[in-house]
Image (cartoon, rainbow, N blue to C red; front, side):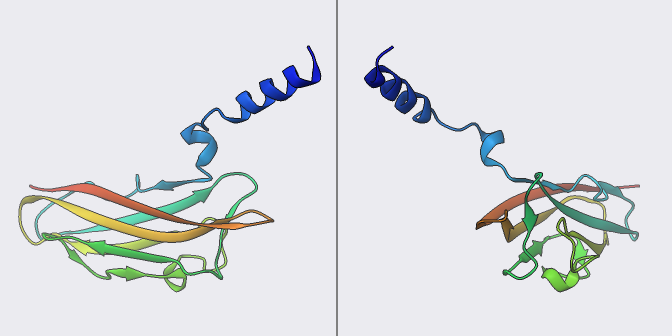
Length: 137
């Protein structure tokens, strides 16, 4: 293959779209959140931002997690780095108690903004997640 052929092949290969897995430098895990609770009891919202190998969640850059629920009583609705279980962790975890006053199909709406960094650059990330919570006996 000629030099031009290699150049064209290289350009075509680099023009291919990245897959979502390649672009995603982190995962947000909410699997430990209480999904079913009895009326009058408390549950626990749990969020863990897990960066990929070679990355970290910046503890210096702004991190904001806003929680909303129409039917559940959240003990806290705005979280920052200071609310993490370990404020220096590269993979921060957050926990917030919530009350379930009456039987219903509820949800916790999460709006998160944070920075994921490698040794060269930090990128701002935003996540919107809805976590269903069943409140029943």
